[in-house]
Length: 202
Image (cartoon, rainbow, N blue to C red; front, side, top):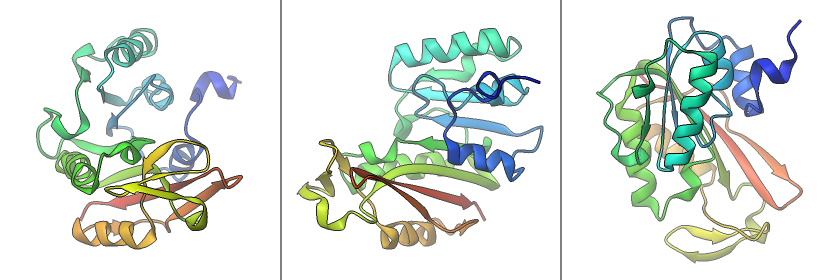
């Protein structure tokens, strides 16, 4: 039996939950938008999915390409691109599943948030799934300090663009999409709160 870490890497636990719920058909095309060092593509690369990834950091993309060389040598390295999320070059309706893990809270303001969100949404196929994990104000409303443009200083000392439940519900409706599970928030010792937002494109 394979070691779980070998199979899944350091995958986001809530993305792992999506795997357990069998939301990835074998022929799924998956985009990790803001992939970082590629922790969320290890399982999908190993299991033969058609994986794509973008990140603004060239070193991150080099790391992801190395993962692909080792685990999925048949994947074209052109699947992995240095690009801003709000300026990606993929055609409309390209992907069955889009991962946005710990990315949207880096928005400079709501307009930047919308640019990233709608550009990812543009590339999602009808009936596709959008999975996001992002810092929110949910549960720590009395512990955050407003800066400007929807950005706040949070108790862990960082500055983030923060959303709340109403904001996410409004965006869900604006996209004309459907929540496929309730919005879930994990409070990390009152230092930050991470919210999971999972949508299906109508």
